[in-house]
Image 1 (cartoon, one colour):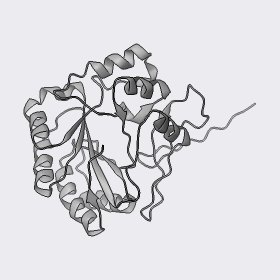
Image 2 (cartoon, rainbow, N blue to C red; image 1 turned 180 degrees about the vertical axis):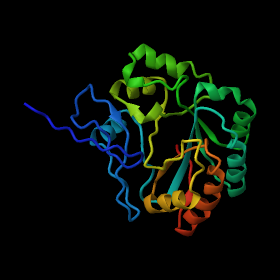
Image 3 (cartoon, rainbow, N blue to C red; image 1 turned 45 degrees about the horizontal axis):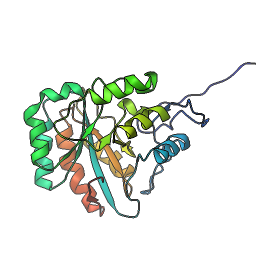
Length: 240
């Protein structure tokens, strides 16, 4: 019997691929935005797993509040400027670090001193569902953060029940996201206006926003989007 498989992949727009609900499901986290300040559609399997293991992808949807999170696998030279912006705007971020980033002692110390949260993004940024439990646990534990992390983000947004269970056993709460843009590439420079417009189209109460700090346009984009979000009535919170 011939099978026709249709796949649509678009960062921040696709539905997660896992749909069957079996114990072996691997979720590749994705979103289908509906606009009108509504929470996006997500994989029902992924959402159920997050609920089962105490994770989250969205904050309090009853409040016009958003949460800034940043994934940092390496330092591209723009984090200090982003920290300057957050400090000036009195916004606290959640920074998910990988092993390579631990060399940036001054920046990590500054994050701590300025009241930002630091999360576990694993030591080697491996595909966790492809590992056994011992491998997952090792990649989480081998990330020697200077502070005790409360939150965990699986690399590339890929997870399964095993991944979330091990993270929970390590005292970590999984945090995915409900809003993201294509900002992880170093070049070309971000189209600041286009990125700002897309964020404003997709924002919704309780949005957990994913950013990377690898592009020269990121600081400029944040300078533009922060007042624009405030103009729409949003404030900035911290995950708990």
